[in-house]
Length: 219
Length: 360
Image 1 (cartoon, one colour):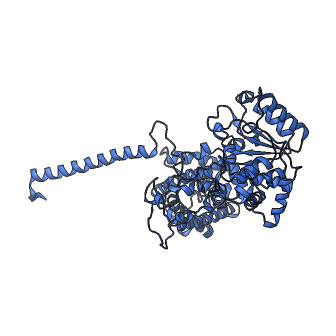
Image 2: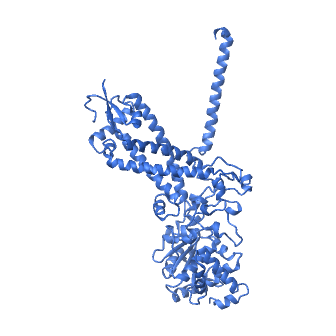
Image 3: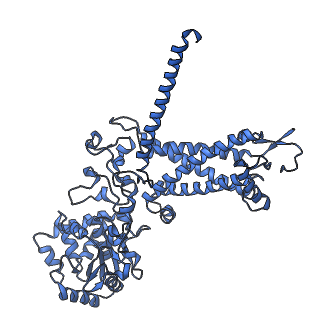
């Protein structure tokens, strides 16, 4: 079969993806440390500030995370065709069909699947949900970072409750990202094994490989 | 009759000097410049100052106790005498019909002028029958007394957010004052108990400026509840440097290290405890080695417990909690892995014995 090289993901989209991924790794590692600072020390008069440092990197990564979420939201509106929100939502008959056929494909009920340049609808919806969780995570995060700010209090109090409740919810939602990362990586490898479109490398170089002269391929 | 300021300052227990001192302490707590102290003194000494009606509902009287047992007599006297306490069930000499008469006289004579202080939660379930005084429910009394007052000061976690009786499952449907009173200004002096200075500051602010001090989104005065305990804590340097008490009585605890890992809720709690402290001898919970339990926050009995853990260890239905479950399953996995290794090694050795070294 002949394949042709198709440009799918813009450079901004790929940067946004890696900023988001890196931020999540840093946030989870430092977040676990902040919850339980295991490097307890009896040493005084030292120049080490382990908890302050971890909090610092947590906050920095939080800003990277926020930036990535905002960029993705903008790309949902002004990105290329694969990046737009309507490509991901089951709002057209084709997308609704794709949503159910993806379930069948992932459930080994069928071997055929639609060649799509961008996300399948199931993945698109999952990513949208992930950004909603990310929004909750960053609002609760800023609520705790700026506890004396009336603005963040007016968001944080009705959404999450007191600082302690916000902290608990922030901690619980963190697990969503760990589970998401696991499923995300598994399905990437699974798809890469099942169809040779170069899905994994596409997030590095932006290109996917699609069968040539295939009527079902969306160009 | 409330005593006049001259009688008050002639009292050998509280002379002019200590009266001014108490006003100065309060001005400092309010964050006012010393230029404002004369205005505070004037307001506190004004014989026309509004009287106070103090209502008790579902509570332990701990807030009143902490006020009257301040080791600093000036503060207690200032609170109890200067604010012209006309009705206070714990402290007043009158009882029964006399007390009721006093309450209604004050309400009529000073309608729209007196301050209403509420201590304790208000049960609302089954028409509020779980707390009654003189045959009337707490809801009834609060509605009548608050509607004729100039402003309501809710003192303590019970009056502000319902307190311990509002903790899950809240059998009496207890709520705080601001859930019921909407027609007059309500301010929440939260805490279990609140610092007497925070209460006095709120009252003196009202007497001096004729309005309640600015509050946060939870109705608490900003001068006392504007900042988090963690950000003013004397042990904060130990937190940043990673020095913690791992458990009560260990080396870190004896050295005065951070109490974060034994459950201190200072990072989630807004209050002035580290700055103002208690009992006029400079003590407060974290200062004496016990973590903050978050008593100024709404619903702290539900959200801040367990007090000695960072976050609630939510039990999984049917399981014994995540740590215990993981540990017991983990031990079995390790045992199975150990057995597998043992069998593998035994088979290998057995094969070698049967077949001899040569076939290797």
